[in-house]
Structures are given as structure tokens and as C-alpha cells.
Amino acid sequence: KAMQKKANQSVIISGESGAGKTEATKLILQFLAEVAGSESGVEQQVLLANPILESFGNAKTIRNNNSSRFGKWMEIHFNGRSAIVGCRMVSYLLEKSRVAIQSVNERSFHIFYQICGTDDPALRAELQLDDAGSYSCISHGDCPVIPGVDDNEEFHENMNAMEKLNFGEDNKKSLLRVCAAILHLGNLQFSPEGEGSVVSNPDVLDVAASLLGVRADMLRENLVSRMFKTVGRGSA
Image 1: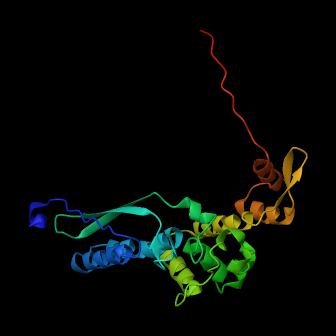
Image 2 (image 1 turned 135 degrees about the horizontal axis):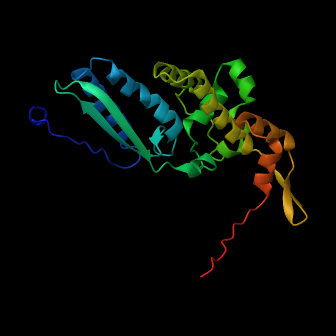
Image 3 (image 1 turned 180 degrees about the vertical axis):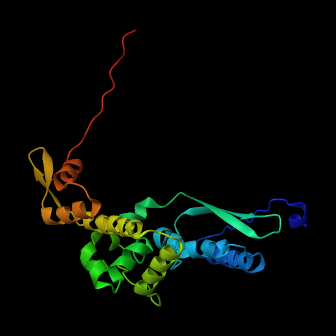
């Protein structure tokens, strides 16, 4: 009846962590793609976005191996014949703190473990990566592997989805270089010097700077210096 009246419909999926919100969303999308379809294959693009969103926004928690650590609003647009013609996604409240620290038996976002676990030697060499346990910021949970989950397989699924969604090679490489740079930055060590501090392992800083495409000296300055901005009073 709602379709006949051309009325908007909403589905709100809520619940505790591990209740199945992510999987329920997938099932609804699969149902809409199967029943409504489209004239341009856009429904398949909507489904392809899932592995990308999950790799950058989902993580293992104590209750759930694939927990969404962000909120997501999705709008599926239909034409007059009830076929899917487009989709709009808005993400919000990403748990940014998980990048730097995790509780015991939890992980950071999947993408970090995927790039560390890929079987692509050329990519690992380009990103200068070792195994996930080598990086401080994603090792707090002491849980580098999820039983039954192949990070390398999911990485290739992620890259395949990006390719089918027309991500350019430069865009894909830029995303991966930023993720790798975050891991290297997490391994930086600092030691006191005078009233300030210095980076005590500059070789790691050089790698991170190279991946980010910035000068190492400028990156170092921003990490060890505090900047103040004063606002002067205007004349009356």
C-alpha cells in the first residue's frame, strides 16, 4: 500500500551490541535488491558498499566479532515503477578512540588487521608493514586474530568491492597508505629533552612521513611542539 501511495517508509534497527543489527541490515538490503532490482545495477553497488563500510567502521568486541562502531543512515531511492535508482548513506558517531586503544580481547577496526595480513608482498613492502602484533596502537586487546575469520580474504573482498565501485587506483592506495601511516605513528617513541621532548626513533617517523606524503621535519615539529593562538582585542 505504501508503494501504491508513493509514501516514504522507514526501518529502524536497534538493539544491544551483538543483537544482530548489522546482519539484519544486510538481509533487508538483499531483500530489496532481489524484490525491487533496478535498471542500472545500482542495487548491487549498494550491497558492495557493505564490506568497505565494515572494514573501516567495524571491529571485534567481547560480545561481537563484527560490531559496527558507528551509526548509519541509509536512504534507498525508488522510481515510479518501484525500482531502485539510488542510495544515500550517512555515517555518524564513529568510535575514533578505538584507533588508539582497545579493551582486552577486542580489536581495532578490521582494515588495520587486513593490511597487515594481506598475502600481497608488493603491497606489504610498499606500506612497510609487518604482522599486526608489531604495532602498539592495535595490540592493546592482545587479539590479533578472530577465530574463523581470514583477514587476507576479507582484504581482497574489500579491494574487489572498491574496484567495482570505481575507486581509482590512486584513491585505493591513498586510503591504504594513511591506514599504514597510522600504525607506524603508533610506534613512535618520545624522550625528554630540556623542557620538551624529541622523537627517539626517527626511522619510524620517516616511514610515516613518507606514507603521508609530508616532510619528516614538519611532522616531527607538529608532534613535539605545542602551539598557542592568542586573540587580540580590537579597538573600541
